[in-house]
Image (cartoon, rainbow, N blue to C red; front, side, top):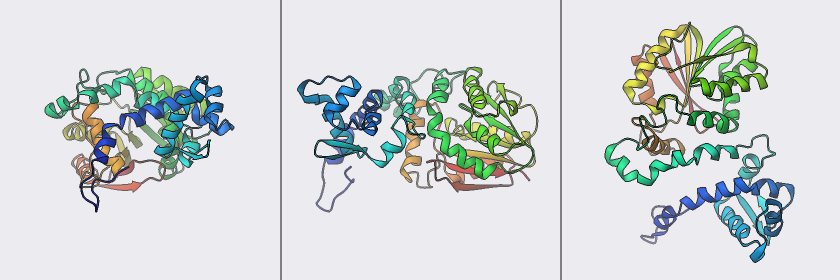
Length: 343
């Protein structure tokens, strides 16, 4: 990709590339749909071979597949030697369906037409400061899109869940509440590492069906129970040693986040912890790119959400009564783990 400025003076390349950036996501989705990466991993590594394996037309010397694979090469997902394509390191790890780390299915949620629609009228959203989605956007009551999220995004979060479990699980009895549990992997991973951990997963009933099934598959169903309802309204049902809040605060404004943090504080036992996984930009709000860019997703899909800095989270938790908050960079996630402790 071009840089914003050049030693040789102004260049419109970055503007042209950005205007055409929609082609990148479209190309990736098409390649996932056609299982191009999986076929290349199997050894079908020319345009003709990929076309035959995927059922694409072989006319025009597999023109469509060739142009798609060349574009994926330009994007850095494939390499090309003569007429032969091979997987780049990221594609091999995450886009070959036979890889244990495969998460091509995440495109089902991220590129869902409902998620993309607001950005076709971003001018209006910028003017009003809120999504054009109905009600409160993605966080409207019992929004069915979160079932799709739970089903599609679990593979993408698996490694992060394992890394967080290594930090948080400890030994001995532990009562855990997993707020907005979704697929449930964060609580489940802790239960797998700590045989004394018991997890209560909180989400909409339709979403919890996914988490419950994952708990069965991963062998912790006897220590995993569902609590259906709205995190802001439902009774948490007891005191907890650890409360997980993964990728949830960013959907709301600061006062709403503080209200939830206060409810969490009240539900924790003395010395208990709240573990928050979030996209946390630096104070400049433009770095690092992955975390800082997430604010745009919140602008498009929520009424009041944002990507908050660590200083803002420190204040949210301090105002709720927490004694301290510590940020930890994760190796398996673009998110930051914030551990806030009750005295």
